[in-house]
Figure 1 (cartoon, rainbow, N blue to C red):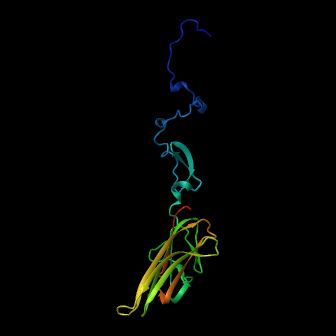
Figure 2 (cartoon, rainbow, N blue to C red):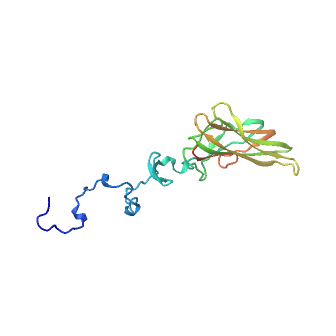
Length: 235
């Protein structure tokens, strides 16, 4: 409809001229909302999450410039969630190849502790609490009286079928009667990175081997003969 008389002058539209909700998201062009238009408190102004995020909590990430969502469980590769130590509590004298299958206890005294759920042990067989890549270490502390000892071995054995075990790490030491001929002490340590993809089938045990009789040291208050398990990350 044409104006009768003189048309009114042009006037800029101000915010007071617009009703709330008048401009819908469909009227906004893609990529029209830029960083400069977002308030700096877009994160800090929200409700605080005061605990560690659940695995299914979602984060926003820029993947080579493309915004994507990601589950919290995938951030950081899992991290160190398990750190555990077990020790032999009682000394034993043996010769030949022998399983270290008794007198194990979790290290629990003098301020020593465990991270996460920790391992479980039965007759010297260690079961992992969760899948992942683990650093497994055995330290074998022994002594012998008079005479030579050509070898003392510490072994780590693993299974991936909960049945057949293979030797995956070995360390050695030896004793000689040279000198005063008294008791001789030594430690032997070896370790392995073990990929636990199934906690029901992937397990670890330890073995010692000596030419003649040796005494494996143990104590309920000090780490002498002991094993360490550290989960380094996801499998």
